[in-house]
Image (cartoon, rainbow, N blue to C red; front, side, top):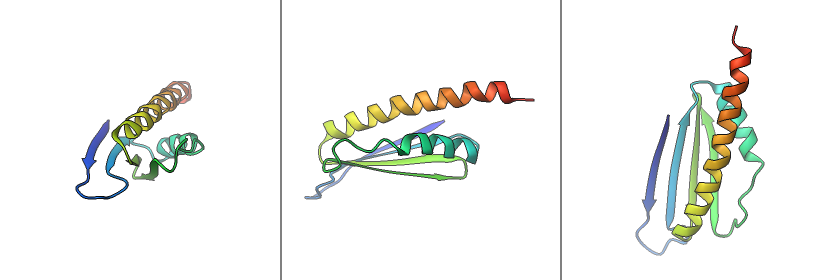
Length: 99
């Protein structure tokens, strides 16, 4: 299950737009595998978008910040596409490993 939160800051902060995503894998191992798979892809425009990821209690948490909404949307969308692929891969591999 995923939880999503969006924020728009008041004031002259460069990183005016932010978004938080949390996915509960109910397994520290699975969350760590997805984290490792996604951590290798750095932001293409780090001067416009920042991403911070962490794993805790079987949950993958991701925080995005961007200078414009369109950069946030593009980064978030691309990230979720790869996240879905990694999650489906774990689900498929897990089926063959159940005893």
